[in-house]
Length: 150
Image 1 (tube, helix red, strand yellow):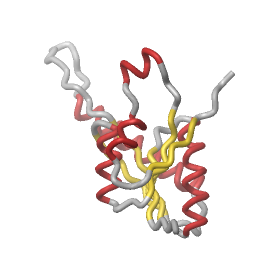
Image 2 (cartoon, rainbow, N blue to C red):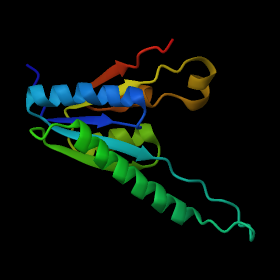
Image 3 (cartoon, rainbow, N blue to C red):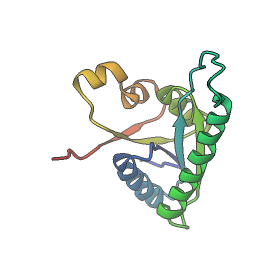
Image 4 (tube, rainbow, N blue to C red):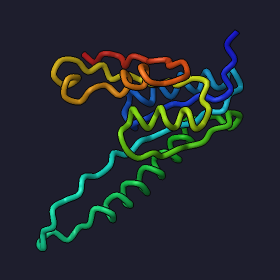
C-alpha cells in the first residue's frame, strides 16, 4: 500500500511546473503528507575582471536568491491550502542533481515533477532535468507531462 509522508515538488515558476504543483498538493492532501516545494537557482559563472563592469556576481546572486525566495513563498501561500504542512526550499547548482540531493536530505517518499516536453536539439543541448531525476532518485518519481500548446 502506498503511504507517502513527504512529497517533494520541484518548481521553476513556469505554467507547466505550477500545474505539476497542483498534482503534488492533491496527493499531499490525500495522503496527509508534508509538501516540500523546491526551486533550484543555477550557479552563476564567474565573469572576467573588467574595470568597466561594475555589477558584481555575488551581488547579482544575492538579488536572485532573495527574489526566488519571495516568489517561492508567495507561490506556497497562494496555492497550498492551510491544512497541508508545506515548506519551501531553495537550492543552488545543477537542477537535476540538487533535486535528488534535497529529496534524499528531506527523506522524500515521492517526487512530483513536470516535464516540459522538449525534444530534438533543445533536449540534446540542455538535457533533461526530469530524466536525470528519474534515473538517479532513490524514491519514486511521478512525472507530469506538460500539456502541448497549439
